[in-house]
Image (cartoon, rainbow, N blue to C red; front, side):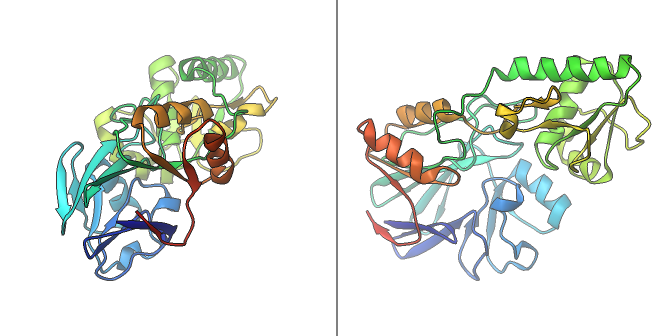
Length: 305
């Protein structure tokens, strides 16, 4: 087996090659997509000339954003690409998100994708992490200063803020990412308040993929609370990057693991080596090495295993 991080994660084994979250799909090379965020979806998805493997939840979202036909993966069920065996595990990031366990040549490799061990209101479950020989993991928040508060506390604060705004005659507007976070915000407003929720047309289109979660919303902006994917002035912001903000209306609700969650993932997987990607990848690899864990910031040079 060999791997590199160039056009997404590239894995070769037993004469076969697969791409995971590539920037561009390549003709004839099977592609796995971990979730439906645009930075993990190949730019040429609409014209791809290869098999595209996704979970059922991810397929619902991708069809609304890009159209297309996909080969469906089911969590905890294996399938083979040549002699490469692949299993999908829920990653807790957004609806349909998955990590992938890859077995080949007697070596096991687990790719976390974007991962959230705490889960959320609109995901199948918190992340499940496989034990493996090798761990390829995200490091979006891979520095010790990133410690997120309890998400239930953040949700309740956001709900109280929205209700307070409405009671005082203001129109609470909440800005959140189009895919995943917007639906989390709708769900928490449905669960923790009696406010009628309106959404932008694009959020409504994506939210149709979330039918199983019973989200309640309208597209009429005259409702008591509005969720938008645009960065509107005076809108509340819901993102992990709001962690250090002093604005009352910024809420650090993240769909990612924080630094300490990342350490727990390493401990649970118990790999002989960790490869880091995304965000503070280099820094997190250096921290792991300092605490005695073999680690490397994965780049675009092939590594033979």
